[in-house]
Image (tube, rainbow, N blue to C red; front, side, top):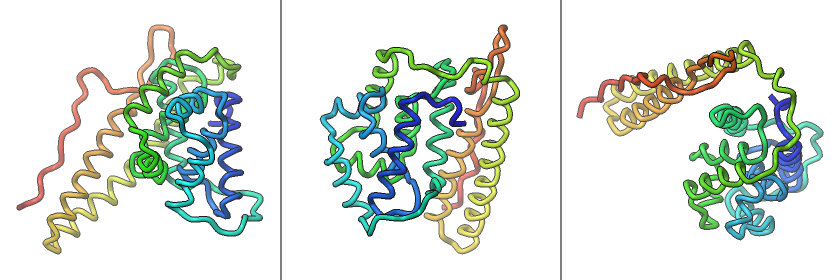
Length: 240
């Protein structure tokens, strides 16, 4: 995936790792990706966040307030959390939806803003940044930014797009099975609130799966998105 990242996106990810180490954390979460984007201020993602007046010091303070800080970590390799991995995957999808052949820091910010349940979303809320407005500014920054040096278009092939879509589909299928099992268990226990929550989770996963449809234009180039006639059947409601 990282071969499609531009310099600004790669710098943001490297800086996210450094921010995680500085906070004494043993993983790279959405909050560290946010700090990396603020720190990498030259790319579209950093420009969009700076337009709110968000400084690195303010962002660090907000992250520390949410997740705390420990002694600096000495690990050489720090893994991504599942949510952070999902942000990276979503940034690629955002790039494809914009018909781009690369992922810059603006696409990375779009992926981060789509992860509404992560620590980064809470941090942005704490500093008074509206997620929808941030998305609009990220899109504006992507459009306004000069084209960055990106990998050759040949690196994106129908086969590679299909392979990534299949990988995401398998992950979603596993999460759907878990959500459905949890919903059934909640119904058996009479926990209708829990069953409703799992139903909403199921609907969200089905919608995400619908967005994984890959189509190819007359030139053979792949795009990702729902078919115009696609409909996601809602799961049955739990009894009241």
